[in-house]
Image (cartoon, rainbow, N blue to C red; front, side, top):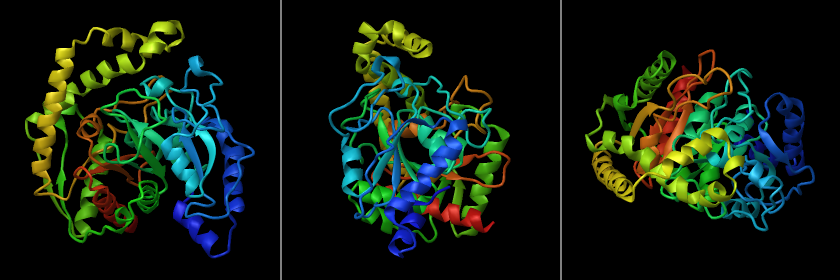
Length: 410
């Protein structure tokens, strides 16, 4: 993979120019993307700024995020060729930092559960996950050092696990979603994919204009290991990865305790779908009313069912989420971070499904920062998820780095 920090270090040392760094990505895309299909469009003539803290960093942007110089097609024929007049707020910020918006990455239609034709870079017979399929695949394949995605249930952390890259779903609304197609306004969160946790911390600190995110360190963190039994069973490879990460954290000085989540949280997990679906029916109301036949089969059927969700059921789900957030806040008085599965196991075979977000739904609903840490050693990528309290993104990244470094030492 291409490390953002390594590229910037080489540029600052005079070993590489910003244009040369972007050319490395262009060459990688030309060589590898035809077999992966991670990119929805490529800006062949993108200018390369010479200055800025992200000068020389080529970025992929999920194709539900507006770009003024490339189409935003939402993964749907309804928006084929649609050209926004303005950048999304996060894209505008990247440009001000000197980054090059080199490509739009593939997405499930409207960031739904439908699969794309993008292939997993580690096994082309498997899915890269979704809905941020192209962003995860592009970083995991070494095409780009940084990519943007979004998560409503598990669309950042799960594909990162499947594609073997680091990723963060930050605290809710840490990054602005202005100019991003809405699926669920109470859940949608912008996220980042990169080669490692230090790359993520650097990029997020710059994007959020919060330098303190990058400066957090932890020496002997208290970690609660959570199995989320209410969400179903994990596959053997995911259980092995979680135990491997636990032992690595303990070797690095962490105290790791088995932790059962309190009762409001399983109920909130079960109701996440109600919030997501009720809001999707409204957010995609125009597309459903005027272009129902052009919607993908799975999304169309999903929205058919969502029309019948009563407002009272939605309100009850929001109350359940509120109670669960209060309970989770209490847990973090005893723990610096939680450790759990990023995905049920390896990426599923075939392209018919993007996998199951069951180990991500709760944390997206809670609005807390989540980081995927790849666990090396298996035949296919699998990661673990580090979670911290709301607003403590720097701590989530610091604990994730501690585990990442310990895993690298073996």
